[in-house]
Length: 269
Image (tube, rainbow, N blue to C red; front, side, top):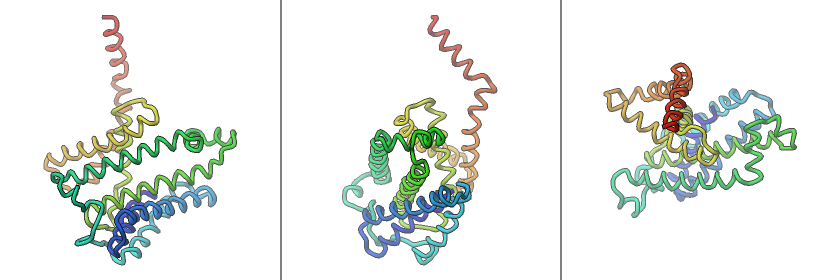
């Protein structure tokens, strides 16, 4: 639940710093660091304070709302007339909307490669072991509390950086821009899992990215059916619910057996 506070926190931090004259790249990095602080607080509340993780996230999310107002000094702040990562000669020469696509691809590729490298280190493997089975990880000497805090810091840092990029692309930051962001994240992960099946960890990182793209395409198709943009969060929740129910549908209608039978028949032929 920290996500819905960290996303606008990163946006507010970056926009406020750019508004005051800081370089957009440095402002984005500062947003990443502020997001890590939010993740650190959530992690400490959970691991040291023994507060349930959901409640810890809600507490930080609630506090972040007031922090965002303090940072911006108002409910929203515009970048009108200010520089951003999306304002340079090269991006201006691209066709309309391709500037967002280009910056998004560069960020996704860099972040994915860094995550793949990190997760293949000894520290990364300890991180994975903690996520898979904390009890087993503790039994082999891994400091699971540290790994949990580290995971929350890295994830919230990236979420805040995403908020900073979205705010710069939109040209403003708003304290309410994090509402529903957790549904979008879950939908992207689940669509990637459902669409591409069993994958290795590296492939799963790519699948999540592709899942977010598919999710946006699904929303675009739905909105083309004359639904209002005000229904976006409702549509997001419905799409997520359908994705969560797909494994149940497959089991109920015996789709897996039908697929296995068709594969077996093809081999026999």
